[in-house]
Length: 168
Image 1 (cartoon, helix red, strand yellow):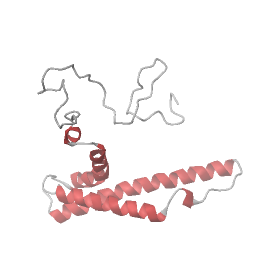
Image 2 (tube, one colour):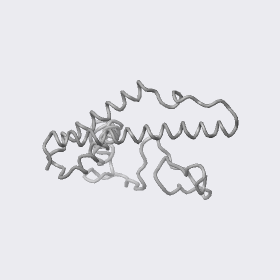
Image 3 (spheres, one colour):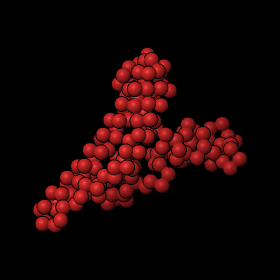
Image 4 (cartoon, one colour):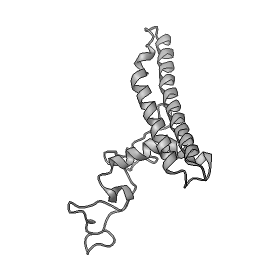
């Protein structure tokens, strides 16, 4: 078990690691754009087209704060530094997922709540109703790409193959 300060510092470190990875991704895109521009003899793109120092610094600050808060909140639950860093790194994504859910039933994964707050018909614990279809979970607003046969493509919803991969 970590002390609250250790948990907070490790969680903040996890948030900082995530921001470093995001920044590296932006700089890598800039590097690729420069190589492509050199190959075609076009003007080189400025780094400012890929990195916005003020916005990126503010986002980094919030990632570190959210990571530290997650580490602090979970310091009694995690048993090591790696777990606290992972909690800090995942804090923004977990909070974003919870923010997209409209109510507690969606956050807990127990189903959709109806307008009056109860479970819809057909859910366990409800009165008789039509059966509820089960299938792969897809986040609201995300569709699965279909392959040539019309079946959903394998892999995470909303993500297709990268350029150069099979099926791209």
